[in-house]
Length: 287
Length: 317
Image (tube, rainbow over all chains, first blue to last red; front, side, top):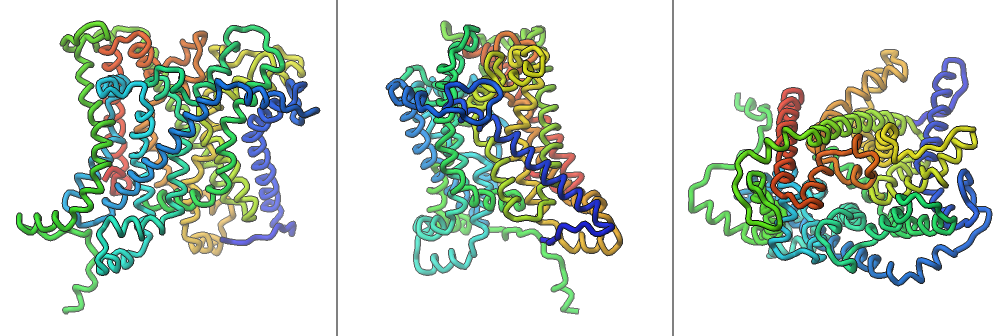
């Protein structure tokens, strides 16, 4: 990368002006990205905060205490955690398996397998046939519907394959010569070397499942099977549509629920971000 | 003369022709891999290929209270004579194309600006922050902005009233709903959209910039004539991949929609949901879903053909 010093010498002034404008513009843009999120956090903490205020005048944990005392929110949170862990485990297994098999250049039927996976991106039955299918399989109201299909996304498989390609093939060959079965090679060599890819694809699947909303609305019938996203939406819509005046504490509570649902992601994100920038980049340039 | 063969271009790998016995030996050799593919095969079969069989209900009269009955093209003639269906169709095209074009223009622009940053720390900070909204679900985005844009206590309306204006119920106004929809899409996805262009820009040969500089190109000319052409293939690829998803508009609209803005916000996805899940008219809703899927396939096939002409190879192989 070129390094360039900010210089105000004659002839370079236009460039310097651009660099300053660019920096200011990007800072403003970041502010726009962050303000709606920041405002929710402030509103969840400050009982007097209405309207324009962006800094809490006083801090109260009233809303969070109320959430903790609401036992009806525990189960949806647990459902979210359970489905997220399950879907991430299943999804990572499926994605890595598919990517590893497709990596074998000479396996008979390779093209067929790729077409089998790619076709899902091109054409699908649609919402109603999928719904009727789940009904016929007797999986209505069963959380497995959320966990099992999560894995196989074409995009993730392509990403994972590009990463596997960067592992030197001599390693596979050496393992084969030592008498490792492909399953053992996969488990002992491929997976341990793929931590960055596993972290980024894992993050995508986990966030995707944590954020899942429609499958719960479509396939779950009991209130006890709903996840946190469904609950958040219920709470937000409670009186917004009725048009009744909303008390300040109500707004605090709604903001706090939003903070709680985003919080787990914001905790993990900084740790995983460096991996996925790299992982996605590899996939993007090659795939 | 024998040196000539070394200079031949490397050709694409073509597996040697094999007879039946050799093939069986090969398949046996790879037996473990077929076992590894089995879970993937089953998962796709059950959750993706089974529903495709259910498309036949587009040609049936089917509700939960009676046996499916073959009606031929009747569901389609019902749809094509329904004003609501055409409204949903027009809305889908308009909303998703404007969203797609806006999103790409802003993402490319932002990627070019981020590429100009020379400080590694500032660059990382910018990237970290602009990616965040992508990971927030549409349900939560809708929740955040329901609060943010609320006519009673929202920040935006507080600013409007402080400036002497009248507060606006953005999400329940037919004229504002679309503007909000486009802006929220930009807020959520512009940053994430840059990731692929930034990678492509990082891959541009530095010598090209140096050569341009020696030829006396200004910085802007280098961006215009080196950077942008270098990522044009990526832009095209992203456009085509997104084109396949253009009609799949659903979650974002569903969570932002309410009864007062149905006119400007109803899309095929939400129409199918209301017809199929709320009114339980499986036949008609499957038919409208199928109509949507077929158009998607046509769109992506045409786009892939064009892509092949320009690039010499398609994305779908």
